[in-house]
Image (cartoon, rainbow, N blue to C red; front, top):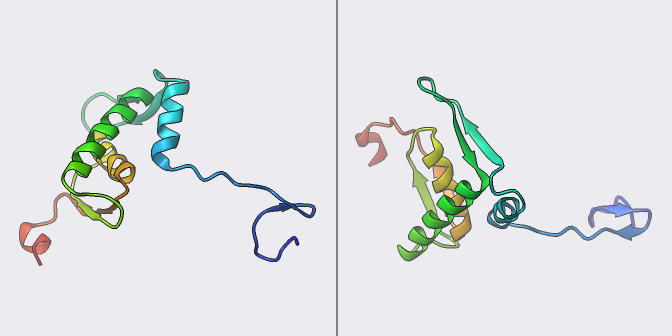
Length: 116
């Protein structure tokens, strides 16, 4: 029944919505167009840095494996204190691929405040 909160409908038929993880979607995009640009970082100083879909997938998978080897997985929350950079993106996506959550923390937060 349409509008009953049970999900999307067309007429009276429900449409199936495929659930795809961020990690799987990145892998699919990298396979379809590995040399396509995934993201461009524009630092305050220096040239723009273009990250290809293949590089994003490869680096985030490396991070996911490292985090999983160190015990990160579903139910793990990782505090991430990195400046905005390609590495921040690789680690965030790598954590999601490992099943962990990410809690961004200001990179310039004083040590005394981080340790509270």
